[in-house]
Length: 261
Length: 259
Image (cartoon, rainbow over all chains, first blue to last red):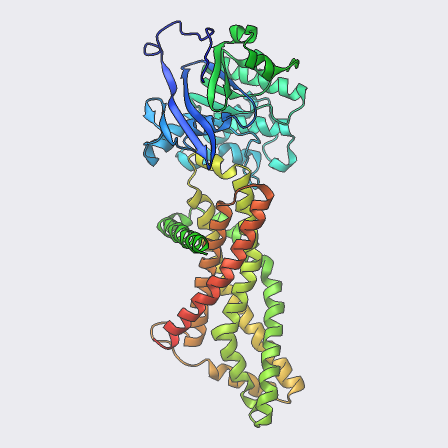
């Protein structure tokens, strides 16, 4: 049973607010395993929504529906008004140019150096001059605090550096929406904190809409405007960051345990 | 059994679709010339020594086996004819195809398989990068070029190896051996200004190169489930490529020599 709590923030009716992403009763299964089970979710323009939840509860699958890597078995996912279940390939490619996606392991192309990885979307999809592309690559690498690594190969980078390069690549097309799939996964607390700060700074500088998947409270504290707790493919708790963190919802307390992170 | 058959049919359909998608994108091959050159180096230049070694010994074995029998009939001066025809028509393209399937094909499937399981293919899709154009086309063009070129090398070294054996072990004069070898390859082609046996072999190897590229790319791009999935994709790529080489070889031989 879906048990959204009273902490849901709806200071304006959803129809009046600028909804960028909407999940309407979305279900997805892999074989006999139900991953999303009638998920309802909205993401509003300019906010940073953090999705928390136990492993295997459908967080990454939710993001993959947003970017069009998966289609729902039933229900509807709309992004900027486009129905992702029915969108045509050309429209999807166009829509994706306004979206950035940071994969768990950054997913850098292993045989391209940092310069070519970050420049890839511009070289493949635009007629931009090479000088202009390189200027933009350097600007994005500065933004993620990684100057002077243009010629390095992905295998020469640490986990944190790979994430930053992945983020620079996600930002290179100057997207209006960015999706982070566990940006802290596999990082030590110090690097993890720096990635959180980076996400927050990028959000402030570029004023883009962000969806972040994480297990970490530190990430929630640093980047979130609003948080949802997902379990068994449904939202069980949703609210503004402060309300969410103060919630005594038993499932949240159980999920967080006595960990401060 | 039925499930296995249906899976095979589905894979064949996926491979055909991939081939079609790559052929449609052929005009952009020039734009990808740097990547084609890279793939030519990896899939062609790096296996030259293997092709030369195997081709040399294949020619030597052919000469020895046929020579011992022909000597009984007093016909050992025909060894050159037999080795040249065998290498040009069948052995050269076949050996090269098998070597490329085992080296370039497996490497290609493992590379794309690793990209698949580490989300790099998904990243390309998210970045709106055309994966067929970016990944498959350069590899297909490279193998379609490399396979015939390596076949020429294999043919030449095989005939040379046969000559060594004919001369050293079967007392055939080298000059006579090479004269009969060259004469055997004089049958003119209908449309192409090359001896038929030469261009038939090159046509076969061209087809083998395309088959290896498409089958290996398809296997790699559909790999799932981590290292195990990459291993399975690699095994499938080599197995299916070898089967495709043998089956297509029969039909090409029939088409070129009997139809």
